[in-house]
Image (cartoon, rainbow, N blue to C red):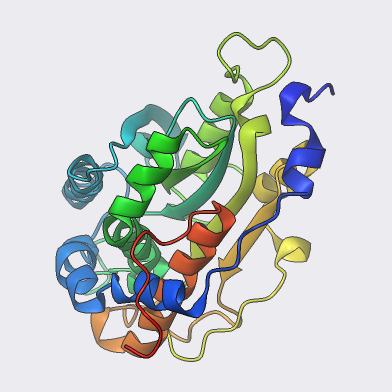
Length: 301
């Protein structure tokens, strides 16, 4: 396929900057775990399977949070109905793009839905703290903490910008199959593959504009380890990889001990690991975007 101005040489040869120690100190000083916990994590720790009231509340929280940023995110929805084991249900992906006119996008993605458990489970509620309220909260905290830096990046007209994807319907509603899973990501992948980018293009799509796709999942437990997941990724991720999208799947291995249990809740989260990963992610994003800190902290201060 003719990649046009999205030649792989631009993406594969992309060089990230390296922040100085004073710039690193400045970046990490702007993130606040307690703020993220209260403003983002607690509102997301509700039952939020597709079509539920909790899902609607979480969607509104994501949109209103990003809409309040000075950076000026373009926030859109990919809303659709899909057939599930429980009939046709509504799904809504949320897409936030810092600069839609940019040629290339660094993408951060997570899923905001929680796994559905039928009411007969003794009235217990599955909240999915690591799966994936924490990853979504981390992305929102990044946008908040680095708001000034991202606004400056947008105003500069950089060729590489930042896009945030919040998927609905990642979890199987009954039993994981190719049809009963990944509802939101499958729908959005098809939509992006068939949407020209730039708008006047005839042979390049929005997928061609993705520099790197970073998927955050199952984050929040103690002592997380991240390995190469490509050998066991989902069909959708493999498909994107084959199309040419570079993917970094940040999912803790082994899976947290509370995975898909009712113990995946706030009480079993590890604040230290989340705080450290917040800082690492924010530094990674700014370095990838070649965005140096505007107000570095002086050495020794």
